[in-house]
Length: 259
Image (cartoon, rainbow, N blue to C red):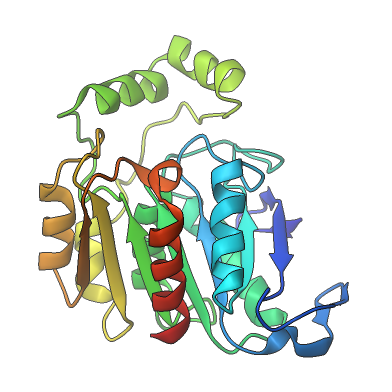
């Protein structure tokens, strides 16, 4: 369990690289053996996900197989973490705690990859933490929105109902096991597209499926056009971690560990 700067307890899991480590002992914040070699990748899941969801575990295994140690965690209001989800706002503090943990474990190089809501969080985190000990060395955002309050698709209209209505938040709590904060943003946080120009010179990758039912292709194009970013438009891919196949995860792992 990690503690964020605003006092929320966040569950997190550390896994050594599957390519370079056969046996590793973890005691507190000290890691022995060869686990410190190479990059640590911190994985930020999408809304209603958690560290133990099958799609997140599959991504973690794929990155470990490409030579990375992996940190997975559950955002506030999700899984075994405390607090309530703010749907991308204060989740930056959760990611920062996970990145700092990776550095405390001894990793000199840390990369982040986020899916959907997690994609917006890794972008904002990279911009806001670029001059702190929570900084990162590479960032990949998959299926991320470019701007807030988007309601242009049916899935996003349903999501807004879930987040903004008391009945919707009850559905989120008992149907999706996601506890949602009922307060509106005040102030409205930096948007993902506003964050992108602030990330350079850190390498940035934007990944998006051409069959994403939540965010159409103007979102990744807007993000990539806002700064120095590489853009992968994936044919036939849907939305977020559930739609990322093994081939894409392998390419992502290569990019995160080698950039």
